[in-house]
Image (cartoon, rainbow, N blue to C red):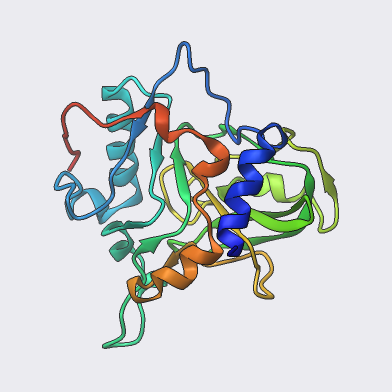
Length: 244
């Protein structure tokens, strides 16, 4: 059995070991399925021209759908990464466009919670334009299998509360959605990603890869919704508008 299949089986057999990373009330709140691929023609060059216009677009989409959060993005080939050179490669080399985590778009300062018991693996401020900004990576072990969870685009104040090796209880408050000036210049959201192997990295792991590297990266980065179980509640927008 591959590590990916082993992980999926482990999750299914230990469902009670996992916790929501954001608070969401199924009875009263709504989730919007968001699309950042080329098929969403409402994301124009004008929308991506500035963090302010992109933030206005996300806010309008959420408000129009009466949604608390917008979610999606795993294994999504996105056009929005053209806004940052972080995702470009040398001339003639394929840029990075395939998203490896799940994004949860919402309000500034939304609380973020640990997905499972573990400890702080590493923290960092990946401050380049378009990068994660404030980042926390936790390490977990369940039934002998170690895996890692990455929380990106956070508030810098949260990094001061943690240190590598610190024990973390599943479901405990660890962070908040950060403002653009602290989250890599993105609309407020959480990038949540799973890794089976950190490959020696600390405080960072690619959240976007080249499409030609898709199979190897997805093998190491399982679908976050295996743990979060949110997509079943998300609905696509009834109509699409854009802010220019």
